[in-house]
Length: 138
Image 1 (tube, one colour):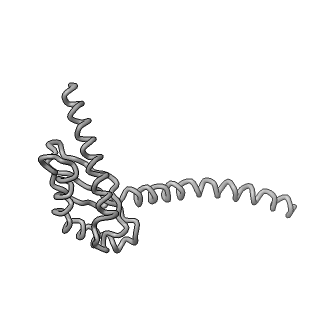
Image 2 (cartoon, one colour):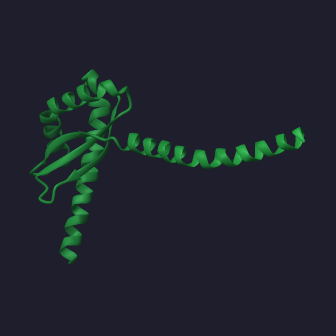
Image 3 (cartoon, helix red, strand yellow):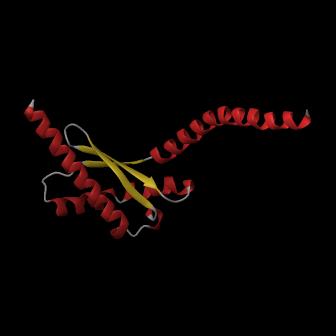
């Protein structure tokens, strides 16, 4: 049991280091203009540590998402080479870049919950608004 805990802790540390280093590269060292408004939100290592999924969020318009992913995919070799030098490890995992849509999903859920709450609140305000009118008409 402790061995598995130690392995999980190590993988979490490696994933966090990968996230920090890739974020630094995206923000300053990659000169591709398609990557301009991107940031890394999460890195998920597979169990063996041979591959990793890098989740990237786009701060720009939605039309820029596909070109951003293509640019990151084409810079994958450079990123892996830089990670190898910076981290000083024998093996850098294969990277695959994916779009992180959690911000949009959270906003959509909040919007739907707001719609759900609104009719209940508006019906009570309508009844309170109709009550004074009834007093004026009588």
